[in-house]
Length: 133
Length: 84
Image: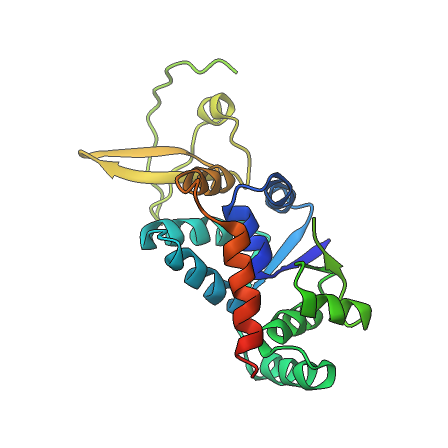
């Protein structure tokens, strides 16, 4: 399975959530793949800084994620931006949610890991499939 | 797994690479694709198994007061607020 990580998943992982850790272990052992949009990284940085996580710990946390072979950080090029803009306008969802959904779609992910209400709307409209716990 | 003291001599390759001997790999459960961490410490090279998930969990455990619900709520609010 190929998953796209919304900020929800990264925060859950940092919070020590067991299911998130188990999913990451499956990725580490090559059973699954994890895509992380760069916007997820930006939002995660903000929340980590906001709750007093040190810069060095954030760097080590994110580096440890990225070093796993089947974890891929997706930088946004024009094609992602265009798709995100279309999604935001067509489905009336915030642009940040649209970046996650567009990344999932263009990267051919099976699921987006999130319980965001606007991403749930995109799930109902069958643009993406959502998975949360 | 019994970890015993193993001391072996090895040569550095043309690109700076070393090969961990089979006895050492077996003792530490290292397989192709396993990660190791290299450290330079007081004139010695230390090479030890590295588990990224273990490191993630160790970092996370330093912040038991991290408020996931608050953080996630703020993310969603900011996403919607930025649209107005």
